[in-house]
Length: 532
Image: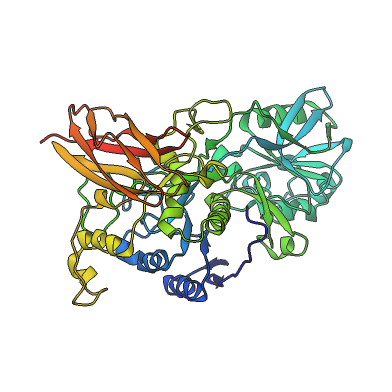
C-alpha cells in the first residue's frame, strides 16, 4: 500500500521449544512499541494478539502513549470469529482499546482454482494452487485409506500421518487425504512427498479452515469440500485402476463475484457480554470494535514456511487472517500521514473510519460469510476506502488530555498515577470519548453524547446531519447543521432517547454529516436500549 515507505522491524516473537511454536511476552511487545515510538516511526503495524480475560484499558497504555506521540497504531482484531469465545471469556476481539485502529478481514473477488477431471468425465473445480503450473494427464488417483501400510491404523492412513502409506500405491499418483486428524496440512504434505505423490487433494476442509491453508511449493495441494470428496471417493472405489487429470492452476478475478464479504474467521464484536455489567476499566461496548475491515483472505506475502521442510523452498505464501488485513491499513495510514503531516494520529484514524464503505462491488450492503447483512460488530465503520479517505472533510481529534479524561472515567485512581499532581482530570463516560462512532450500552431514558470535529478541507462548508436512528431510539442533533471554516472546530451534541425496548440486544444506525461539495462524514451509532 505504501511501496516507498521505509520499514523498521522489532522482534517480539521467540521460538518456544516446549510447544514447537512461537510466542511473545507482553513485556517484549511493550518494549518494542516504546522503542518504535522513541525511534520516531509514524505507523506501527501489529499482526498479533491474544485473548487475555484480565486485560484492561490500562494494559494498553503503551498504545495511548504512542497515539499521544503522533504514532498511528494498527492492530489485528483476531481470527476467532464471532463471540462468545468460551465460558470464561466472552469477547473474540483481541485488541479492544480506542488508542489504535482494530482491523477485521474481508474477502476479495480473486480466487485460485484448479480443474480436476475424473476418467469418467466428471469435472470438479477445486481451490488451491501448486508450485508452478501442473498438468498431470491421466495419472492414477488413490485414496489414502486404500494405500495404507498393513501395520498402521485406518485413522492414521486416512489422515496421512507420517510413515502411514505404501510408497508403491502412492508414487506417481494423485493422493486423496482427509483434513484434520490432529495433524497439520504440512505433515500430510510431507507424507505425500515422501511417498512420491504427484499432487495432494485434502478433503472435507471446512470453510473457516480453508482460509488458513498454506500454499506449499513442494507439491500441488488442492482443497476439496464434502460434496466433491464424496464424488471423488465413490469414483475411486468404482474403478479397478482409477485415473484423473489435474489441469494447470489458474487465477480468476470475477467482477461479478460479491466482494468484499466479512471473512468467517474475523473476530467480531461486541467486546463485552451485553447481558452482564462490565467492571471499571475492562472492555466496554461503549467503545465499538472492530474499526474497519480490509482485504485479508488468500493474499500473497513473504513467507519462511511453517516447518524446516517448507523453509528450504518457500519464499512466498498465500495466507489469510486479520494479520494480512492489518498491513493494508498500516500502509494506507502512512500515505495519509505523508499527505497530511500536521494531522494527529487520532485524525488519521478518523479519516480512515468515517470514509469507509458499507457497500460491496455490486452496490449492495456488505454481508457476512453466511449471507446476512454485516453489522458494525462485524465490520466496524465498513471497508477501508483508500481514495475517499484522502479528503474526509471533517476529522474527530482526540488530544492526550481528553483521552486521559476517558481513562479517569475508567479508574480515577489508576489515571492519577500516570500524571503529575497538578494535572486536572475530569472523568468522562466512555461514550463521550471523541471517536468517529457513537456507542452506548444499557441506554436508559435519555443520554447526550458530545462530539467535535475539525474542518480539514481547504474551504468553508455548510454541513447538514442525516440520521438513520437505531431501532427503539430517537436521535436529535444540536445543532442539526453548521457552517465551518477551514481549520476550525465545531462541537455538536447527539441526543439519544429510548422510545421502545423490544430486546436486550444492540440496534444500529448512523449519523452522516454532508456538505454541498461532496463530503460525507459517516459515524456508526450502536445502542443497546434498556428499560428504566
